[in-house]
Image 1: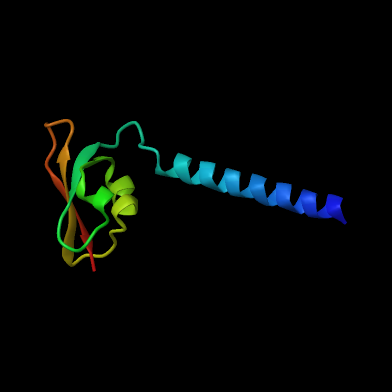
Image 2 (image 1 turned 180 degrees about the vertical axis):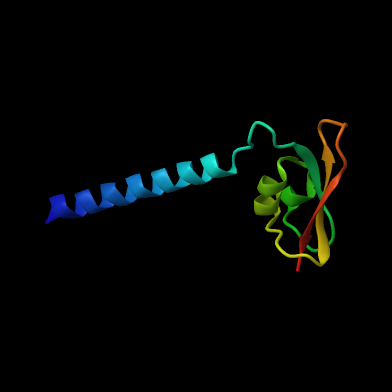
Length: 91
């Protein structure tokens, strides 16, 4: 019984690790994806969300929990100044 439990526990650990790795691969910036310095706007955020976050638009949406099209959630200043600023929204 102990071996079965240990096997199930090991399988759950491996599945969790693979899932976390897959999420990081999906969220990793693509070669042509612009990186921004994001600042939280509006709403109440945790203290770490008040500091600038550097990443792609998709990464910032996940970091700040932004989703929607109505209210500003964060504003991004491009690292490469040749492209316009971006805004992500929340509902």
